[in-house]
Amino acid sequence: MKFNTENYFLLDNFYYKDIFNNIENIWEVLPKLEEYLSSLFIDGKVIGNYKDKKNIYIGEGTVIHEDVNIEGPVVIGKNCLITHGSYIRSGCLIGDNVRIGHGVEIKRSIFLNNSIVAHLNYIGDSIIGNSVNIAGGAMLANLRFDKKDVILRYGDKIISTGLQKFGAILGDNVSIGANAVLNPGTLLGKRVIVYPLQFVKGVYIENEIIR
Image (cartoon, rainbow, N blue to C red; front, side):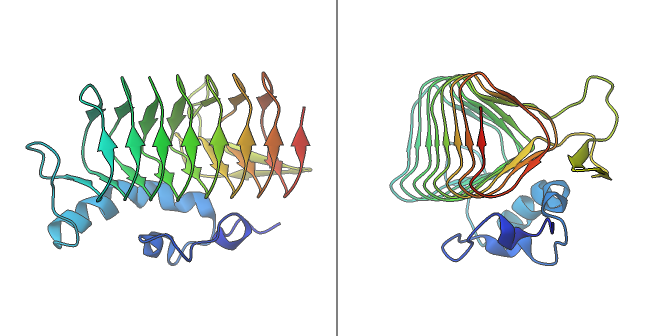
């Protein structure tokens, strides 16, 4: 199986799709995320417009509740909703029409368009595709207990990512049930369904059901 972008996402309508240029394995985009975001502000492609922060950009029509904490560099697209008590940490790139519910923490991650994170979730060092639904309490863990580099397990193969912090890749139209936990280095292909309360690790191809 190839771990390229096309196997997980349709990028046609994602404004910042150039971040995926020259990437062989999809997780290789994560280490360059903060530098990419900073360059958008330095080059004037986006202008900080959130409170007094010069490195946070909020797209037209997006609603940010007053008690949301955002640390730049962060870019959030059009017509999003970021609700009560959420924490958007540095290095987040969020597309259009994304809904982030109460008490969600997101750190150094990419969201494509039209995805929903319900409430009380943690998403670290991950890439979330188009039209993904993450139900309440689901967690995308990003650090091994032994703090060694995250590996992928696919069949009989063990693949080193070279990353100490790496959560999950969720392809387009993935659905994650309530209180599921995704182990560091989990890759879910398009339209995979994870039932509630599952502990998930490894690589899954399109249309699989994890229960």
